[in-house]
Each structure stands twice: as C-alpha cells, then as structure tokens.
Length: 167
Image 1 (tube, rainbow, N blue to C red):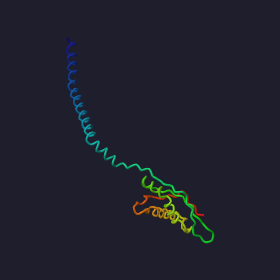
Image 2 (cartoon, helix red, strand yellow):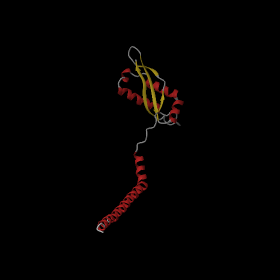
Image 3 (cartoon, helix red, strand yellow):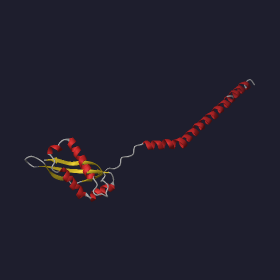
Image 4 (cartoon, one colour):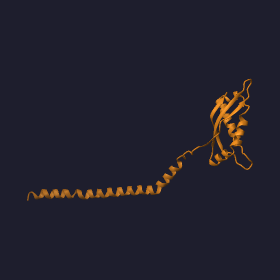
C-alpha cells in the first residue's frame, strides 16, 4: 500500500491541469471566433466600399488614338532668286470615329485649305522647332474651321508632321 499514495498523487496532479487547459482552450476558441466574425463583418460591410473607392481612384486607361494621314503636299515658297519649295506630310489626331469619317469625306477641301495656308511662306519662317510647332497649330486651327454652317468643327486635336522638307 505504500505504493498507492504516490499513484494517488500522480492521479491528482494529472487531474489538476485538465480544468485549467480546457478553460484556456475555450478562451482561445472564443477569441479566434471573435476575430473571425470581425474579419467577416469588415469584408461584407467595409470591404466593398473600400474596393469601390480604390477603383474610382485608379486612372482611366488611355483611349486608343485615332489618326488620319494626309497625302504629302508640295508647295512653292517665297524666295529671292532661286525657287524653293516645302514638301510636307502630316497626320491629324482626331477625337472620335465620326470626326474621322467627316475628315475623310471632306478631304479635298481640307487639302486645299492646307495648300493655301502653306503656300508663299518664307523658307526662313519654317526652320526652327518653334516655327514648326506654330505652323502645326495654324494648320489645326484652319482645318478645324467648320466646312459648312450646319456642320460642327472637325474635332482635330493635334497635327503631327511625318515629312518636312524645305528645299
């Protein structure tokens, strides 16, 4: 019987930690379920609003540019002595497909406007980068003028030069 008391102590010692570990386990489960419920609530209530705000803040993807290329033009320039000419090729950047269709439909009139604008210029007025930028803006303004009283402007956003030769 001497061996019985130590076994009883071991049995009592083994039983003592059990209630404490089960309380700890229950506390952990309650904590985890509380955290999980808060996370689920966040994703269902606040998450869609945060996602929508993030999507609004994203910049829109740039639209595909629409260009209309004009056939190259050759015009005489004013010069003293020997004759000089300008050979120019350009592309027009337009705002939408209807503007492109209108430009293609009225191309002969637009080419005529460009020829009249470019003819009889001094060669020296076409040499610098600033001169060419100014010329591109003048061409854009002239070609954007309405073709008739009942028609809108052509919707030309910019003019780009593909070929530019003064000779």
